[in-house]
Image (cartoon, rainbow, N blue to C red):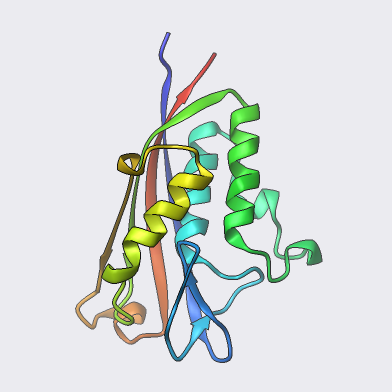
Length: 162
């Protein structure tokens, strides 16, 4: 029997000086990075939360708490690998699809999206066509429009064995 589960993830990080901007596992040239305990990859954090949610395994704060120094400066692609392993151990056989949106006024994301999709699909061992990433602005509105930070949403569909 097929058992499909949907998960949603959201994350937001404020800009910080003297940090690399890493989104979707890709280092993006910019004058600021994002503040966070790990590498602050807002997209991968939303992706991990969507996967964990679909599998009923909580969120990334449960698995990689910001109070744990083992995860200080952690590479979120490596954390995604660990999350995917936990999800497979919980009986999720495959990712049906992942759809994510990055909300950022600046920098523009479009040219970096193919590399993000490639990195994520490799870690999740799925076809590139199963990973979709979009980017949008907030037309100058709110904290994103004021360029105070970047946010991301992700929705996934998992096939789970019962």
